Amino acid sequence: MIIVSITGPTATLARQQVRASERYADLIEFRLDLLGGEKALDLLRVANKPVIATCRSEKEGGAFRGTENERWALLRAAAHVGAAYVDVELDVAERMAAFRAEHPKTRIILSHHDVGGVLRDASALFERMKQFDPYVMKLAYTAHDAGDITRARTFLTFARRHRRRAVAVAMGEFGEATRVLFTKFGGWATYAAPDRGAVAAPGQISASVVTTVYRVRRIDAATKVYGVIGNPLVQSKGVLLHNPLFKKYGVNAVYCRFPVIDVGSFMQECAPLLHGFSVTIPHKQTLLPMVDEVDEPAAAIGAVNTVLRKRGKWFGTNTDAAGALDAMETKVRVKGKHVLVLGAGGAARAIVFEARRRGAVVFVANRTEERARRVADEFGCTFVPMSDLAATDFDIFANATSVGMVPHVDSSPVPKAILRNKVVFDVVYNPPITKLLREARRVGAVIVPGTEMYINQAAMQFGLYTGIRPARAVLRKVLFSL
Ligand code: NAP
Image (tube, rainbow, N blue to C red; front, side, top):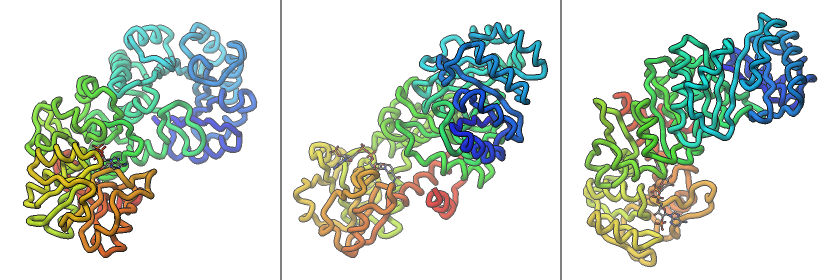
């Protein structure tokens, strides 16, 4: 079930939200506490789907400030105008009996929202809720790291074992995956946001994304779970790329975002749910010693960006290196060429390693020169001070720094004069054409955007996850339609 929470706050916006959401929703929840209370009751008749009436108290993260009697009066009135369900909070559950006597056909969703905290004892909470025999039990708590999502799963496991309908949501960005994986965990429904207006709870995903990107209706116990770990992940395009590819190639899998602070706890708590995952900033290096096996490029680079479960063990690899060099080699073979790499972080190490492996002569420069000197020593290439860039003889320039990335789109890492008639590659892919590439083109350089590397490394990841090598044209189409 997909439940869309209507938040308004105006009646006009609420009506628009209902109209736009009905194509995705099985149930429509009206948040009476956000919609102005009693005066919103008329709105309930607008929906063509069964309605849930909810009036969330401030204590549980809502906006209702009236008395408990007023709240029950509102829920009774909602049942009277046809709400099929009412949401009742656990701490006033003893008043359910009187409501039931009056409205025996209205189903009760018994809910508990632990707004600040993380659920400690899912089993005790489940037992407490069970004694009131609601139609559905709903639990929401705040996740503080991706590992916290497993508490929702534990709660749903109890519910399934006792043949109870239940919803469990880990609120906030760290809990986002619980809103996608609910059927996998045995949940009855997910709460989604309308495409316009405020979300009813932090971390809620829009109904259109839940349905069309994650395709939650197709997720079942056999669906394989993949995802990306990093922090922050708001900028990550992975879910918008891998999920359409799963659809295109008919793979029963889903790709979620797992913002992670503590990688060790993620590996212990969350990773067992997954078949593989992509790794992004800042965890590419931290994760390396936590996998069972790494291939030679990942070990040499000192970073993994892809982790796969193989025969019960975690295997780490790095698709950035080949992704970048394959992109450059669409323009020129690097063997025997002079490649000047700017940067000394993870991307730079991947490019230096792979360029060397493919027979290039590599030069490294970096803002913090000591770091470049170390990379040069480690990979057997030549350190170049920033002041000597113009005097360096090179064929290919590779920017492996984040300079030029949004929001700093008016920055370029080097003066354009040094780029005349060279091949210029930029690791930055947002924006697709950076200031560096624009200027390089103006002085006659052949340019290679970071989007090409992104497409290559994502295609390799998809291949590792599924055994299918996606057509680059498909990937390009998906990426550029975002
Ligand atoms: P990282 O390990 O943090 O390294 C950042 C590098 O950028 C360092 O060399 C740093 O120099 C340099 N830098 C940062 N700000 C700078 C500034 N204002 N001026 C000069 N140098 C600056 O990051 P990373 O993992 O290597 O990622 C670098 C970039 O590559 C990011 O933008 C990332 O999104 C992109 N990337 C793209 C792809 C793709 O598929 N296209 C894949 C991976 C990464 P210092 O050492 O002096 O701090």
